[in-house]
Length: 67
Image 1 (cartoon, helix red, strand yellow):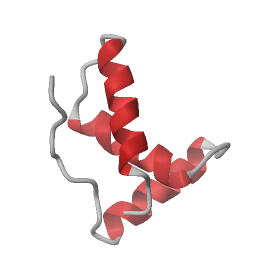
Image 2: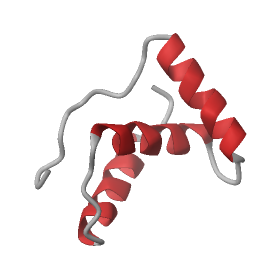
Image 3: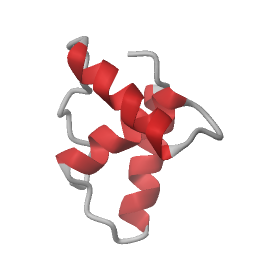
Image 4: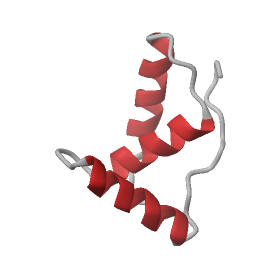
């Protein structure tokens, strides 16, 4: 996957620090947001997620510590 896994893990950690439970759906959305890049619209994120899932490289469900 083209997205930076370190950036996704950092966002997951920040979500947990803020008291947001990290679900599989939220994790997939974070991967899509990071892979889509900065300053993109929701439509572009949606298209990125669609291509990620269609191409068969959805993010793994490996859980971070604390989830």
